[in-house]
Length: 299
Image (cartoon, rainbow, N blue to C red; front, side):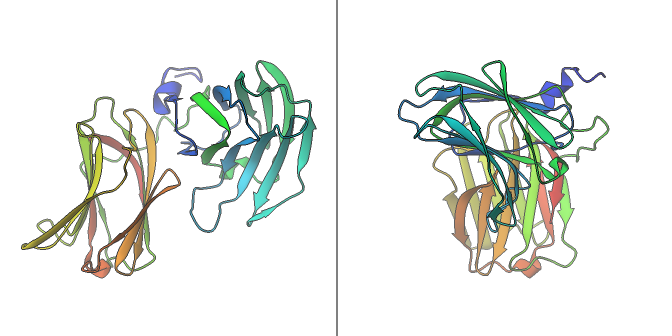
């Protein structure tokens, strides 16, 4: 298949009307020739917004940001570009004469080269910025601030190599030595086109599932449940708004804590949940099943 094959679009489909702040994984990272298109409207009383291309989506410490694109409207409209390295901003670059106005629609196109990005605004070239971090490290995009985003698209370049492996679902990931406080589990996958639901279960053995995370598309509910023993069980809703969508990639992070666990989806925290009865060292496997394609499980 050539570089303009339809598979380029299927592997990372467009995102429509995301709620800001919005953070998403860029599958395959930023390769030479990849383009990212953002369409939206600047709010009537906008002060600023930013589009950031990050090296990961950790909660703490803050990830490195290879490209920080930051239009500002509080004085003469201009753009600040910068790089964040080891939680410190480097010297910023200012681009005046920003062709964006409050209350008006816009289209931004980011075209990535070997170590730089070219940005066009409403079809006209506006700036070129050279990153001071390798773009090969970038795997996450974030959009924040005073805009409404109508759509985001990743164009031209295949975000996953055609020969990259998918993990067969149901999928079992083993923890030979169990888990411990401060361990993390990262699951990257794609929701199927017509999903009913999927689940992630942490097991001590196939018959004992002390912790399960379940997504149901019929009820639009994300729940976690725990059964410390046969007589006791606990269930709790994770998020007020259902965070998963058909044909959309996700990166789910679970952080083990002493007597609790934390969840984050696409870099956004989903909260911390108490499980004082859970013994992490007795967990031997993660079981994933349902209407998802799984690309990687890291622990």
